[in-house]
Image 1 (cartoon, rainbow, N blue to C red):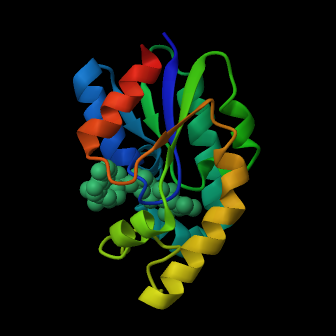
Image 2 (cartoon, rainbow, N blue to C red; image 1 turned 60 degrees about the horizontal axis):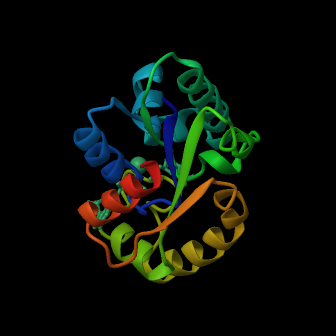
Length: 172
Ligand SMILES: Nc1ncnc2c1ncn2[C@@H]1O[C@H](COP(=O)(O)OP(=O)(O)O)[C@@H](O)[C@H]1O
Ligand SMILES: O=C(O)C1=C[C@@H](OP(=O)(O)O)[C@@H](O)[C@H](O)C1
Ligand SMILES: [Mg+2]
């Protein structure tokens, strides 16, 4: 069985959807950020603060490769930036994975992130106006990498269960 990889911008629902999908299809689920935090013994915020983003991206790449090379089936929820560094986007095309881009509009992302930014160092210190502008530009810059996924599911105006059903249809 192929490993299932969920990707997309911060707030698109990777962690939430991966957890629910794992409950339904009974497969183990790993959130890449949580895996990195456990390995480092530090929160994502602390890693950014103490080591900086470049070091985080190296740790993220190593962790992603480790999980891909681990035996067995699993659902992996990536971090929002994972496909955009260290040629990680190439790994999304491997034959032994199914990669799915959870595509959300700027409005959806903004509405979810505005109440949920403290654990996300890239946006934690931005006010609402700055955040909207940042998401718009950043999503545009990152879209090239997200579009390397094998599949795409639009998540706007869908419940968690609806998105999970869309993913199950892809996997069927
Ligand atoms: N329909 C939905 N699907 C997924 N997440 C949703 C939905 N509606 C609200 N959310 C919320 O959006 C937030 C961001 O989700 P999260 O899974 O952390 O995203 P990511 O891991 O992609 O950054 C969470 O607080 C989640 O509860
Ligand atoms: O988009 C990014 O560069 C990041 C997204 C975060 O994950 P989520 O997308 O799960 O918030 C986390 O990996 C880190 O804060 C950097
Ligand atoms: Mg997440």
